[in-house]
Image (tube, rainbow, N blue to C red; front, side, top):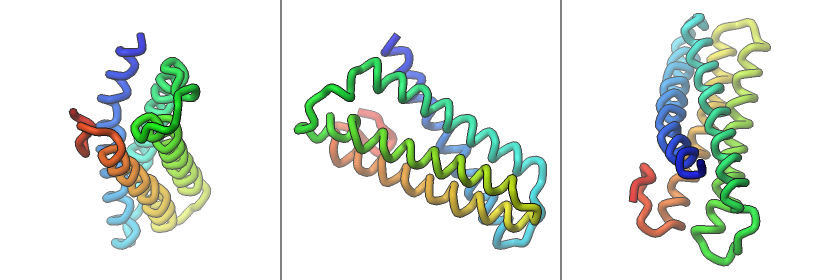
Amino acid sequence: MYNILRSAHSGWRYIVLILLLLAVIKAVSGWLGNKTYTPGDKKLNLFTLISAHIQLLLGLALYFMGDWYQKDSSNAAVRYFKMEHISMMILAIILITIGNSRSKKVVEGVAKHRAISIFFGLALILIVVAILLMVKSVPGKSFFGMG
């Protein structure tokens, strides 16, 4: 079961990254271009939110099934997955959730785009930083997690 969840978590990350990148690009374009907020924008942001939360559930299952919380943190790779990865990803998903919530509370389209741009953008930056830390901490891993 652990290996199946790990494969799902590993593959699902690409869906999350692609949706998040598309949502940020579309939101920045809408914010800077004074565009209206369309039902398509709302769906993209919702799918991004849902995919991130699915990724979180898969990750939490792996974290507790793999007993990461009990492992020795003196090894850089173990410390990365035990503390840094989970902390940064939970924070990124919190940012995505806040951004989606804030976009629903404002009426004006440009304000909706601005909320998504800021919060989803910060989440994207945090995820990229986490990936770079993984490459640094885990021997043999590349930017896309292969290796």
